[in-house]
Length: 568
Image (cartoon, rainbow, N blue to C red; front, side, top):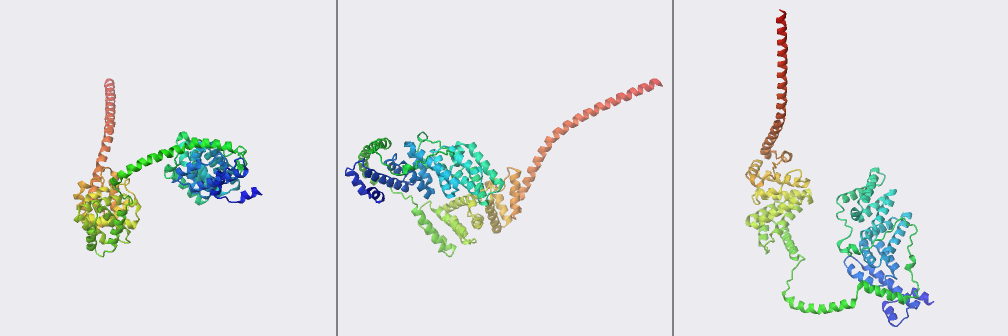
């Protein structure tokens, strides 16, 4: 009756502590059961609250518990928590890696249970459980708790007879531990990707899974960038501290030791407790000495801090002032009807030196957000640039930023931003040498930057006219160099000519066409010189042969004449 009551009754922590302090005997089964329940509750609580930010504090608390007695409880708690929250799998793997470095039997027990559950789930085709277990295996391999051969065995099992679920599991597994396999077993990883390529070419799996495989190949091409084996905050062990267990997926006789999850009476409870206390001291060290040192150093540091409080400078790193300034600028822009009013308000803002760049960026961003280009932004930017040189320099920076990040903008935003800067360049608010940021060649441009340049020059042509635009470009040719009209090779020159011809500004390329003809003529002459040398040698050899033939004919004819004269 007493045993059934103890199993069903909840025991508050303060009553458990009172029972321990009241001199309960350790050889009493009731006392040991109370301690077991408290151990189970403590381990479950620590595992449930651990995350990447507090893992450094939770692990010492975990080592303070009797993990040798509660090894089964720890493994069961980790598996249940990981199944419920797969997003914290790497955190649980990091905890097990640290515990395994001190108590290796826990890491081995957890791997045995995972392998046992994996085989069971593979037979039952339990996809959700398989996904969670495969992710746990991947991170245990990343933490070097399990040998990487276990990962290769699992991949072989999943891809041996490929199905939609099996291939999807393999892709998810490789995303988690592909970076480690790329370093430790490149040949094994290559074999897995060859098998996936064959599966993709066969085309028997679902389209969705085919897209997953293609995405995995793209990740592999980028060397698994964005999918690290271990996050920096979870890399808690040095290489010499890691203990790796070689567990095979084909071990049919794996014993999960489920009996360690339940309470068993221990006749040598006191002896085992003393042994664990000694081991805990060797793991954690003498906490009392550390606390005394901390208190002594803390009192000294408090006195030093009290003296240095007056010298501290408080720096705001939350950028509250910058956010407030952007808000003020945005409201000013939205509440202004005409560009004169907006320019006056912006110039009247109480801003610190160096904050002009924020105004320039906000004007460009507000212009980009409009459905169609609004002239007010170009006129305000023109007025600011002509009044203060600081705005002129900052608009040059904005031009470089917008051109370099043009691939992030939609077509409508590209049109608005390019039209704004075209207005500034055409009105001399920005110098023409800002076009030097544009390198017009096939290698140095992409589709977005070409659209940007197209709208930029078309707008300048509308404002200035193509003849005047051509004159301005010719006048600033020394400043622009080979950026707009590259002359380093015929390929780049031909690309620039074709680009301006396609956007309807072929009149700007007359000089480039003449230069291209000259380059082709020089190249042709060089080829002819090379060919001419070889032809002259052939001609000389042929002339020598003809001279020898003439001499032979003359000799033959002279011989015939002599014979005829003798006969006559």
